[in-house]
Image (cartoon, rainbow, N blue to C red; front, side):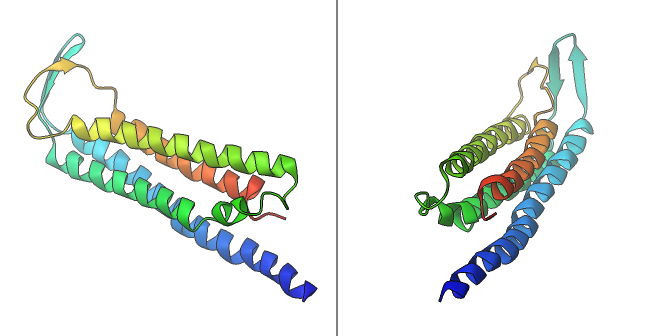
Length: 169
């Protein structure tokens, strides 16, 4: 019976880590790449610029790619939280050494912060490409590209969550 428990930990390490890295990091990478493509599509539209003011026509392609990137980031974060090993280990906090529990909780909190920041930045990029926009304003600072970078960072933070505080024994 003692050997079965140790085999379960090994199974948690290998199968869950591989599955989560492929699924979650893959979704984050897809979100980052699609967000970068949305930024390129946004730059292709006609715009006029006078100092800090800018009038830019909305890009339907950038709008849709932004939504796809936001959906991939949301799906990656949802899968990370629901099926992640961190969720199953949260109930075992008492059996984990105290420092590991703190690292686990800090990484988990950081994934939430990064996911919310990425979703907010991507939403601002999507908002700049809505069709009803006809006004001119201050220059937009490449929100879609920055949101793509945050998607890549979300993948890195989640790998750190697994490596530092997740299933590693």
